[in-house]
Length: 180
Image (cartoon, rainbow, N blue to C red):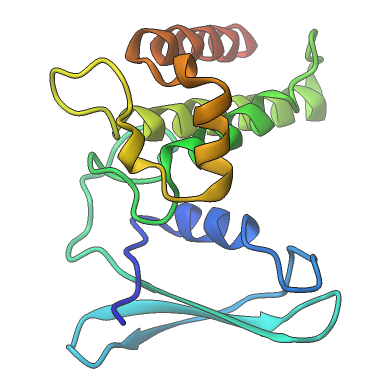
């Protein structure tokens, strides 16, 4: 089986954070290495023992064929949709990060945490939008391949419309700009 593509380290780590061990624990100390696959492609291999039960965990992700263009700001990937997370998972990630931001973020460490959370929420919303086909106005139902993503889409399909995603993204970006 060919490992899935991880476009960035941030995407790989987020994927691992969303995949708990069978004991329910999410975190594990990760050792990483670049390895060659049977077909000669390069991959990142993450291993470590679960902090909850000690079970060995391993994740292997194909690396992108070339370095992406250097951009500004935090991104989970390039212009193509993720192979690791579906649009529903990305929207849940955006919700989780936005939920970490207090109504009136303070300066100092609290302000820095709020900026980091909003930056990641905006980047996760950008990822949802990559699943909308050119000329389309909503994320197609067939792009949801996780249980949690399908459940969110069934409960709230309107949240996956381009105009609504853009409005939420613009709101978060505006809040981020106010934080400086």
